[in-house]
Amino acid sequence: MRMTLLRLAGAATAGLVAAAALTTAAHSAEAADTLGSAAAGQGRSFGAAVAANHLDEAGYTATLNREFTSATPENEMKWDATEPTRGTFTFAAADQVVNHARGQGMDVRGHTLVWHSQLPPWVGGLGAADLRTAMNDHINRVMGHYKGRIHSWDVVNEAFQDGGSGARRSSPFQDKLGDGFIEEAFRTARAADPAAKLCYNDYNTDGVNAKSTAVYRMVQDFRSRGVPIDCVGFQGHFNGNSPVPADFQANLQRFADLGVDVQITELDIEGSGTAQADSYARVVTACLAVDRCTGITVWGVTDRYSWRSAGTPLLFDGDYRAKPAYGAVLTALGGDGGGDPGDGTASCTATYTRTADWNGGYNGQVTITAGSEPIGSWSTTVTFPSPQRVQAAWNATTTWDGGGSVMTARPSWNGPLAAGASTSFGFTVTKNGSDAAPAVGACTAS
Ligand code: XIL
Image (cartoon, rainbow, N blue to C red; front, side, top):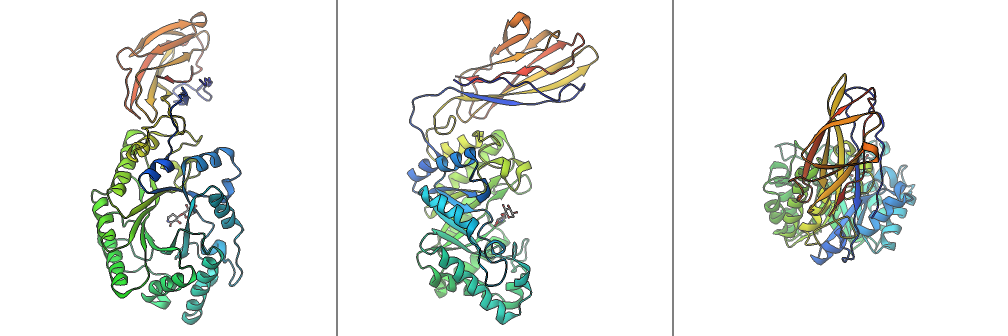
């Protein structure tokens, strides 16, 4: 049992809302289950985008190694990283990710060879004939360097326009080489590393819509003419404006029915708590329902380093604690139903907020949230700075210690919580001259 106490900082200003969360976990002897092992049990991989510059951080690497069976270099294989100057190839950062991943027995997704973004300026300056040569050289050199070590390559990324046009996106490749650049890139890629699966990857193609239908027609055409393509990647960047579509599974299935594998390649879902967890579970369930959905990759290990960090879209928080979404994914993968990752535990967090404030007193509220498995009961302490006094408390059974300054709160009626679910209790405090915030202790779940 691990117990810590956090003194809330920065709440000295009247009316300021302070919040802090703490977790504690009761360890059990249950067999560990992880995203990677649960996905493997379903014949799938579970990957993460990996940034080379975080590999020296212990928590990052421990989480990556424990949970994931596939890695996608987040930026290190992009054209600006691998060929910043024509003909000069730099593989050091990508090598770090590939070597780490393969050293851990992970698959590697190569991302990405031909894309309009993160493209060094020199590429856009070339004329058509030169650009064709440069594109094929780039594919040959980068794929050649990693030959035999890449499970799947995103050969072409994001070549279609958003919206209802179904048109190709303007890019140096599209504008100078025309529609045929995609086919040419795939043919070059097949010859460069015949063992790698070759994918087309895009976003806003997750549901059935004009853009995904345009991609669908291209894949259908490639399949009918024998242009080498093995897989389609669906990025899966979701948020309030772009939620997981109702026809996500149907869309994956129609592509799979063309005879290609489908993969969720860059999954992240902005949000928190049960809403986020439910969306994650839907994505996993949809993938598992499609035989040819061979893997899911989340776009990062921790919210802290997510490209959309403010939206907290990933499975681990900034301190590598599993979020409710983690438990939902593990459960959907048929894992052991959660607990803290790797050790099968019940857990909860306690978060403090000042909900009202006046001259002589304030109201405080503590929200208890179950971790990634259901809990039967919880308890936490709240320590009030002297000479504050608690006048009343509600929605919890309280006992006192420490000369009347440490309140232990346990459920009155609201003990059992589903994974990720919350309950709150509150109190009214007389300040007696002290405006400091109380310290919420670790939440203990059973
Ligand atoms: C993003 C990275 O996460 C960021 O670090 C970088 O600044 C921009 O690119 N679609 C893709 C990914 O295919 O390569 C992008 O990754 C996210 C959108």
